[in-house]
Length: 229
Image 1 (tube, rainbow, N blue to C red):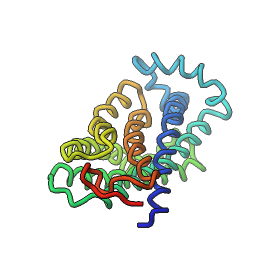
Image 2 (cartoon, rainbow, N blue to C red):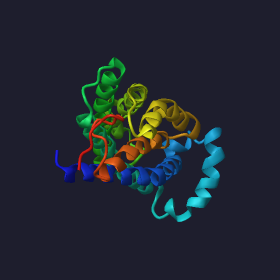
Image 3 (cartoon, one colour):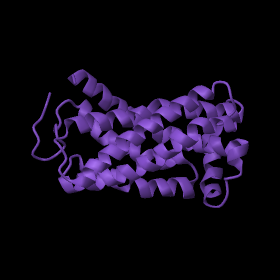
């Protein structure tokens, strides 16, 4: 793989994390504004959603609620592939993993990231012509997006623990991956939307992505690895 492609993937992952940090809360708020999401704005969700809605202002009212939700979903679909690509490039530069936990972490994560990216791409295309509340979206959400999120977060935590044991650098990536599943639970069930729970996943790969973009980083991700560039 050329250095140019590697650097592009690294920059893509870094930008995707920045975009996710901004778009995820807006996507969550937009979801609560459509009929199917309004029913879920209760308890802990209402604590932050009310003040955040006032702060967001015109970012949520520039179009009808369905269009706003669809647009932020489509933006999210554009950045999710960055997670898959960054993880894939990183795996390609790692030596063969000896620990079973890391090996299975890579397998589960990469397959799940691919499912999530493909599912969201289909949803984004469908949203061009259907409402965000349409049950038709379940055609892509149930078999691809939902399992992609669940297994992607579980696999990420497995991978993160395995990378921590292997001495992976940057350590921030390994620690964030190790915490992805519990943080997704908090984001989904307490904060109220899947996209918010996935922000730590974007940040995890952005820290490695930044190393990729900087051109000279450890090829294996360990302290003993050789550098490239």
